[in-house]
Every structure is written in C-alpha cells, then in structure tokens.
Image (cartoon, rainbow, N blue to C red; front, side, top):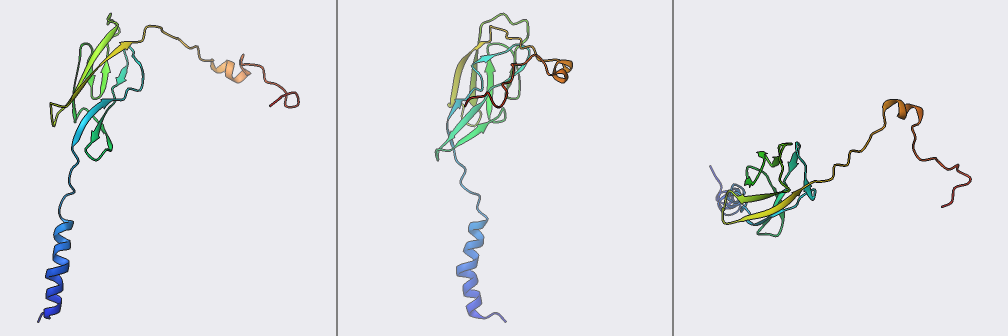
Length: 146
C-alpha cells in the first residue's frame, strides 16, 4: 500500500519537476542579421565565404548558414555560404542579399568589390628551404641589440 506522505510528496514536488524538465527551453528569436565578412574583397575562381550572424532577442550572436539564410547575388553561384565567381567575370563588384528564411522581413544587403591587384607571392622551393634560402641575414647573438 502507498503511504499518504509519499503520494503527497510525489504529487506536489516530484511531478511538477518532471513536467518542467520535459518542457523545451524557450527558443530565442533572431531580431536582426549582419554581414561579418572575413575579407574586404572577393576573388574569382575560389569559394568566398559570406559570413552572416544573427543577433538574438537576448543580445547573443548566432552564426547563420544557408539553412537559415536565403542568399542571392548579382553574379556567381552559391555553394552553401560560399559565393563562387567565374574567372571570366568582368564586373568590379557584386551585390549580395541575405534574407532570413524564418522571417523574410529581416534581411541585409551589401556591395562587395572584387580584388583588382593580383599579388602573386613567390614561395621558396624545397631546394631553397633545404639550402637555407635567400632569407634575411641573421645577426650573431653577441652583436644583437634589444
């Protein structure tokens, strides 16, 4: 037989705790979205990652992916969050628009220019590395100041 005290403690203490534990946490709403670009220009023929973050109603930030955002652009094609521009593209800029799928009233648009100066950095060959290369001369320990 059940003792009345155990039944009361179950009904008044344990049952409400179990019910509260089963409730999902209140989901935070995305109030606004922002572009946080890793670079100031796009490059042709590579994946240009377009970083969009959502600001939540509690003030925290959440990264957004192509699952959360509908991306469009005036040029190129999309692979997830990455914009890929054809190497034959002749424009100087691309307009990118991000729309929150859960609430299309929340959107941002940005103009991103293409990289115009190609800085082809020459890396040392394996032989140059093994031979010590033509790097800057090192100062001897005794004569060094600092």
